[in-house]
Image 1 (cartoon, rainbow, N blue to C red):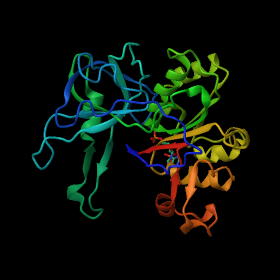
Image 2 (cartoon, helix red, strand yellow; image 1 turned 120 degrees about the vertical axis):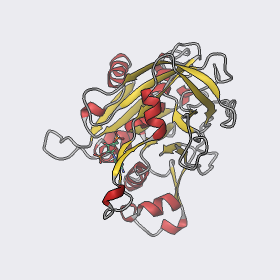
Image 3 (cartoon, protein in one colour; image 1 turned 60 degrees about the horizontal axis):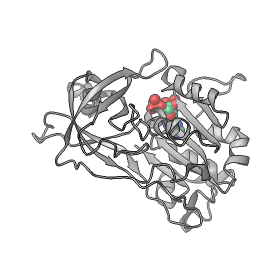
Length: 329
Ligand code: A2P
């Protein structure tokens, strides 16, 4: 995951929770024990995504991670250069108190990377199955297996110190839902009692069967009237036959999200998932005239309408403010 550094503007800054970082560095990982590894999709799907729980009791990570942070996993073995594999970062999917309520068990959401290796389209010899090293290692782990872990890392993609001071728009695609699972559990089921703020989570997935933690999120939305769970299924149609599109198309259609929620001074936006999300989300917010508090558009784009912004322009010239947390991969 890459956290995109925000533009600093004190007028908009929320006071984020203080968190611990780098207690276990990648150079000297510690041993955790897998306690659960289960499929977390809503049905049969072309993807394989698992909720993996790791007991870190007795390590410096115990009780020291927060929802929204990441941790590292070092897969065993060596890379093609004969060097030990490097650490891979995974978003923590658990609430700050962990899966067990005592900070001993953290979890993540891991998708198997399965692809076809095609270095050159006219070179049939080199075609073959490509399996992501760490994702398949993690998805194969069984309860009782030992795993090398590091972390925690990340201080930007966390909740404010006083979550009640803000309202929230959380935008996720695919496994980008992981940090939101933990943050939403913190907000609604955590020690401080359910927050009174308005929280909207918009989740984008290719098919309904790819929705992650769907039962949990649906249950929370039924229980807490101020938590709103929206799904955008890119490869399914709306009742009128038009495509549902991506999350930014949904934002465009759902007038209450931009006319009401995004215009409030107290709203924070959190975006997590595919790197491409940033383009549509930033462009749509700017086009709707609500980008101001969340985005700083540099002079280079001043004369260009948001509909004409290219992805590369956005990456270079549009930065999130402290009211917009962005974590993309
Ligand atoms: P699609 O794959 O139909 O193009 P997953 O990670 O499980 O594949 O899900 C990612 C979801 O995000 C899918 O619905 C995917 O749509 C959608 N998506 C792909 N590109 C973008 C983008 N640039 N902005 C927002 N959503 C996207």
